[in-house]
Amino acid sequence: MKNTTGTDRSITSRWRPATQAVRGGTWRSEQGETSEALFLTSGYSYDNAQTVADRFAGEDAGMTYSRLQNPTVAMLEERIALMEGAEACRAQASGMAAMTTALLCQLSAGDHVVGARAAFGSCRWLLDHLLPRFGIETTVVDSADNDAWEAAIRPNTKVFFFETPANPTLDVVDLAHVCAVAKAHGITTVVDNAFATSALQRPMDYGADVVAYSATKLMDGQGRVLAGAVCGSQQWIDEVLLPFQRNTGPNISPFNAWVVLKGLETLDLRARRQSANAVELGTFIEPRLPRILHPGLASHPRHDLAMEQMVATGPIFALDVGDRATAFKLLDALQLVDISNNIGDSRSLMCHPASTTHAGMTQEARDVMGVTEGLLRINVGLEDVEDVKEDLDRALTAAGL
Image (cartoon, rainbow, N blue to C red; front, side, top):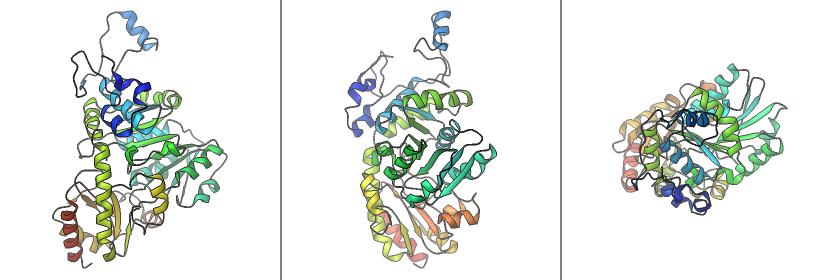
């Protein structure tokens, strides 16, 4: 591979985020291709035996196996790290592979984790079921209660784990406060930033140690592939995360990495436009609803905080229509918006979290989190927002709202 300015940190670190999203991490072969090359290979050949020995000993920088290095995947990792303001990144097979790796790579039996109670259903499953199976204690707290984080700390607390805004209730965490509390106690913060991405929010600017992603969502942005990523310091990635990933193998395929690279080129445009569409749609339907949750609306309890730590507030919001029957009537009346449990897509999508993304949780846990039977989550896409308004207006009427 021929090195280019896309991998020269002395140059790329000066670029603004939108430029990094298009050109950061780009390598070019001797062919001089403008679009990133797709390397579909599981292994590599070597000129001689000493070369391969040196590579496996870490004395030669060349590649050895695609579970460890792949040129296409490496370009994605470099680009995401640049956009995040991180020293390093490792791509994963999916968002949940990223969350699981970010936690298990640094935890052992006898450790303790404090997590936010509002979270994606599978992230709560990690806290509520997986980690305890391996002797790792967990405590969930109201993420909006700044004092609750410090109060939950134990002598064996190793990690704070949360997402902001949270799925699906759009809880917003005070990044600067919570990260400062963690640092004061030698605790590592792991932040799920999938609802915002670095285009809208950079947790490391507020003191976060590790940022994890479902790149399936806004980064791809068109509902095509599964992908994940974990960002951190070079030392943490190399010494803590990489040994776990090398030996357990939650790696992304080169093709999926290439698709996400293409998605990143338009991330800044999509994220800002979809955020604006979400605020406009939310403002339009809010007078007709018992409850609406979007940090871009003045009615959100942490609206001011969201506006301080986010460039824009994202394409996703939740609305509560009272009960499951009404929620299903609204969903069934949609003509434009798809019923789907994905988010971050360029298409507008809506789902009923209690029966989909959070169905694996107990009713009690959903109640505490605020995932009611009447709660719906919408991802606002890139369609003309007037068409989405008309569709929601019609569906709300059909549901008796």
